[in-house]
Image (cartoon, rainbow, N blue to C red; front, side, top):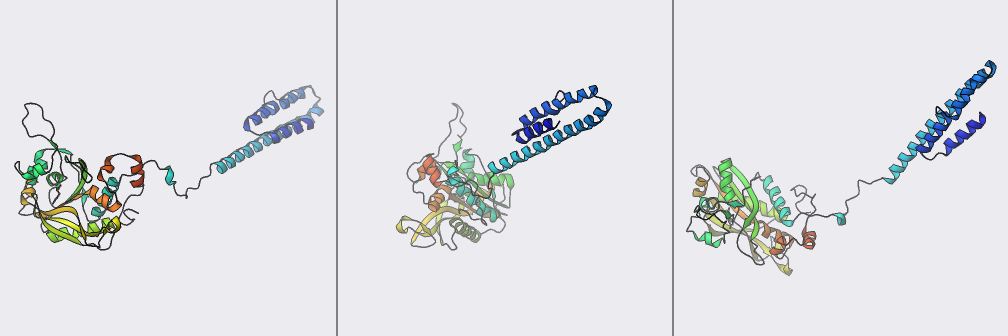
Length: 358
Ligand code: DAH
């Protein structure tokens, strides 16, 4: 019995994994194991011998079983320690920038920045279709069929089936038709911006056939040009992340606003880099004005009761200026090297409190 005990406790101590341990269990204390065989011999013994051998065999069996349980627990502990050691991970480390595979396109980034700024000013985001009727794109905006603005816009017209003489759909030439759709849908008072893609047949360093605008519209009973000026100043300061900025409102003409103004920002181009808020240059950034009564009426709202301002900003243009991107066409070339260089980390959502562009 002492030999059996020494043999099995020794084997258990040396077992390196659970499978070995199970093998030892079967051959020691299993149904046909060595201890069981010894127990069968009890029958052949005298009662006196049995009184000594029986409890001793039971004690041996218990001892081997406890050693097995203890070893099994020790093996499991060791395995867990090993896993904790090898799978250790410092979750406080920053992510590795070289691992990033995708980035936010500057247009998307700037669109998010613009949305964050206007959201703080109480504007919500509205959207409209990129393929629209010429009523929404032109007529409803006080641009009738003969108006020269139609020709100036280099409109892409959609094809109509032969014999169908309804006016063709157009690829919207600006985001202004979303003004009409939003008035129809939401009525007044109204405060919205509408960012999105627009199309014109034009192509050079500062023009691409598809580009982006953000439209703004605020309607209420007592909105004036002064409100427009304040909102635009707040916007430009927040967007270019400067404390002060000087805007110049130049009288202009748009069919959908009366009066109309184009807005320039004071800036300098010293050393080829743009500085906003100082210098002797002016940079045109947007068109704006008080919404024409005919446009308000086309949106189904009474222009005798409601009035307001509207503006249209070129998003791509703002992105070029803020991030020093010289050629508009590169925005849409899908060149990975360009995207990696000018792209933004996709988890850095712009907010006014956290910083727009960090
Ligand atoms: N829709 C004009 C364009 O694409 C921009 C514009 C000018 C929009 C004045 C406006 C506005 O809402 O009031 O050139």
